[in-house]
Image 1 (spheres, rainbow, N blue to C red):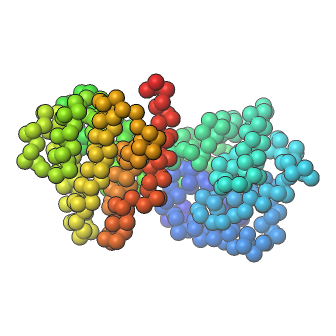
Image 2 (cartoon, one colour):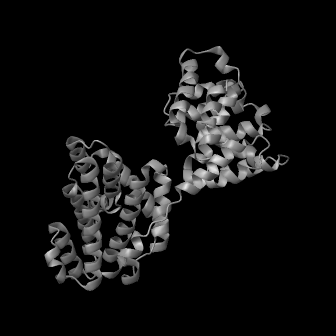
Image 3 (cartoon, rainbow, N blue to C red):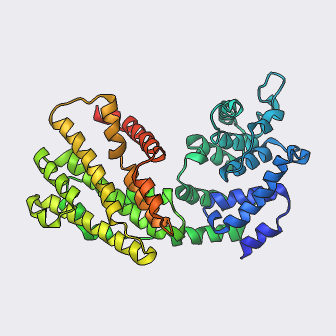
Length: 399
């Protein structure tokens, strides 16, 4: 309530922008989405009307406003930075010592879109002069060093909030109410899950990567807000199961075992589980139980049967894993086209997105589900980006 009153009573434009920025970086802006949207809509209208008053700002205020508007989906042109350029089209030299302005320009530049030459130039300009800064206060020095190491747009918001809380508490303009709310919120959101231990997968499958903490950390980076607790639980389990099944296909299983495992997954036939070795039985039953439990929860809460769709997602990824295993065991080197037609599935994006969709969507429409499970380009290209990024990151290890 007190923070909402702050948002309502803060009238100075720059104060409003700084308050919104602090709320975001402290990880508590999701509590005030409507209020923030209303404030930023007013700023956006000024741009739409080409309000001259909106142009009378220094670099810091201009870049901060631009970044916040773009983060919230408003269309803002990079041309607003033209007044900070000289006759040669370069950023003016008087900006070199503007630490706050350079920091905001740097963070803003990572929200650039294709062919935005001004923002591309802004990255190089701001990085160079931030690195050249020698006489700046400790707070700005820490912000600059942290930002140059990893720009705000690339961070995991929940991890960034934990770091920024420590910075914010030492700032001279620190607001005690915001600080206490941020600390309280951060502690509340840290949930502990016991599901993984109960599956015995880490204990029984010693060859598999035990990465539950990493899976949960990744999930909180994707969707940390408390109201999405169910989705976080689901995605943590999905990632843990994907990691384990990937290791079965990639590290431990023989080709014959993998063929049988995949056939049973395709049929979802619990009665045939005795055909599998013990470690595969445990894995299959853990997956089957997870799918049934999630389907039960969704049916109970949303009245929609999702078992066929979840099974399809898991069947498709296991078939992709099997194809890659066949290539390996047979010593076959696939063409780039053959590889990518399988690899965009084996990266598991479709599995993660389909489970996330069911976890957060209400009501669930059959047409939307069918569209999702037909794997449109939106999913395929997202998966391709993740696959190529993963291959680039692991290529040296595999070599």
